[in-house]
Length: 530
Image 1 (tube, rainbow, N blue to C red):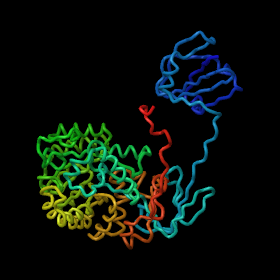
Image 2: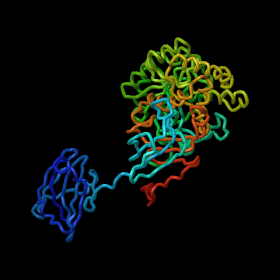
Image 3: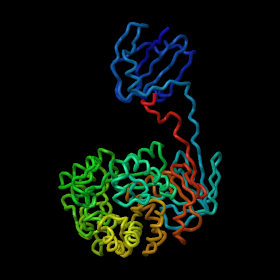
Image 4: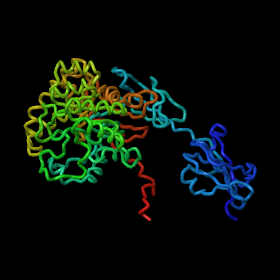
């Protein structure tokens, strides 16, 4: 005997649990009658039965779209003319009688001390309760919760997962290659694979969220999605795709090479004029960018441009800012020279990256417009050392620029901090030593509490993710780290994160990486495999 079919259309409110489906040979399919219909609206539920021999399947379909149906003579009712079409556009589930959902796993974290990203004061002892990868309560004391898994961090200090707002997540570790070797001998596929290694190491350093400030060919977006899908391990990511700047500027990939050389992947980073700038912002948004990065000044590691000079016009900067903000995207501006800094701030960018030649007038503009400074002291320190000891590893002209620019950044940072400019934590450098930025900031005059807040509360505010990250409060992701000792007394402890949790999953315990389950068998199989 073949399959028999019949059914009726129901609205969500008529039977809200209809996506819970049932199967039993005890039921009579005819109890529902044989009503049919021509079409349904989006979000409506088709409920029908299927019968083969003595088994009756009661089926519910929550439809994105519903095809037309035609009347058949069989069984005196309505039958689908194209059942396969319906299944292809609706979520079909056939199963046993609906069972109550299993209770969500509850985890409690006990710690003797806590810096919560809200207050600058040390708190503790504390009990943090987690359900479904999020924080549900934060209570003083060492409390017990019936049936909960307990993670006891002992005398450690619990903190929110750290946020680095200036990373480049689209590349592999340098492996000793100079800049030209890396650009011309490493493929984007190699970069993509290497970037996953970088992401895992960064997470284990305690950085559970990062903002990627420039990568070519969508590698940062691919990495972000791979992490979200569980194919790779790493922090939560906001990505900019390619940064935008003018011909010959800091983002022009053709700087310093034979003009006859080209690469099909070198697109999306050069804009000349407001119209091109607006179009590329829209294109970045369409492709999946979370933020836009621009290059209004020259840079240190690029060839032939001047870090002091403003290379984008005010009209180009305004076109980017206005278009990005209209699309709900924030704008970060790489800017070393004072003119580029001041004009970008006046025109509404959300953050200035580096800020080398900012002065007292600039600080007033930052405060007036609520703009963040991302000082990136670590990359300045590293590049200065390379310029002194191994200038051959840098681009032509970069070593001299590095020796001139980087010593100025600590003084600029100290002046901005004293003036009350909002500071967010960003390193602009490779993994392994990212947290050393804390020591450099404190060494330049920032308090230990403010340094930690720059990588938690402030960074989350700049990225627009304060409701989910940057603090230990109910409703936030269970992104937590712990260090042994008191980082308010010794900021270098931030360079030795002992325990890392992201989304309720522990990735590092007692200073050791925790292996994660592999992708389920068959989950990655493609149609080409069979």
